[in-house]
Length: 116
Image 1 (cartoon, rainbow, N blue to C red):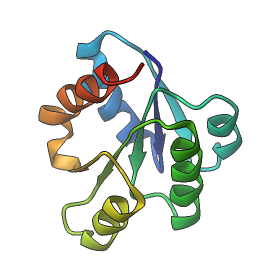
Image 2: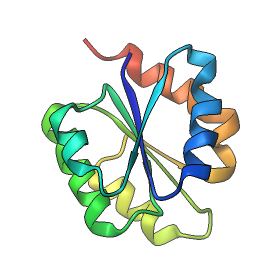
Image 3: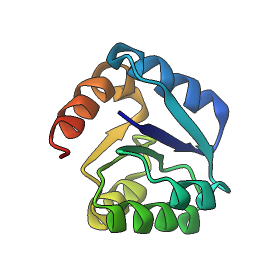
Image 4: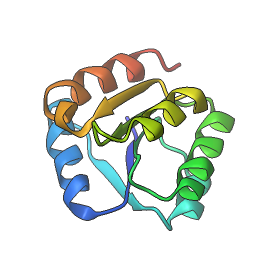
């Protein structure tokens, strides 16, 4: 399994890594400016921080859609506009930051199991 997290800040990356440690696979952490790295090697699953600037989120979604890979978007519970953007952009799941600990590993495993 190849999972990446594109984040706005490293504190959130460590939270994602801890949540996905249950799956037993490492998480490649990409900062918002690492769009070229994402395009060069799209992961099987991307955890996308909705705290990133809109252009970074859009570029990440374009890469993942082209690769036919799922995206789980995570953002603030009060940022309903970004959550709506994620749904409309085609994210497989949209979580609040508070749900990461209890739901991210389960949802990630579900989407990874569907991949060929």
